[in-house]
Length: 117
Image (tube, rainbow, N blue to C red; front, side, top):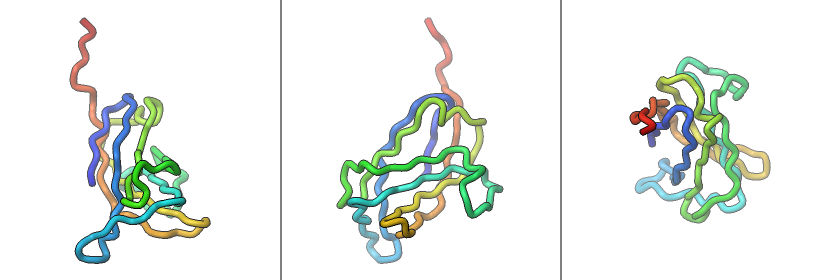
């Protein structure tokens, strides 16, 4: 899962989280769980999110049994420098780490159409 996000534009994207340790992959049941998403610079290897450019906490899921949640970002959250970043999702339950997703790429891209008339 990779994302292109327009700079300084609100965004919302459906995300499905799967257990890829089994074949075939199966959806994680995220009922009652919290999903954290962090976006960092490619060279940020800190174990915490103190320098993360975007952080999200997702608690309302549209298809929890099927691993489906909605990732929404505000205009302020997407107002970061253009470029390629890394991200991952972490599923928490009862304050314990349940699973981390594989790392994915996030591209902050310019808005294509700039005209106003």
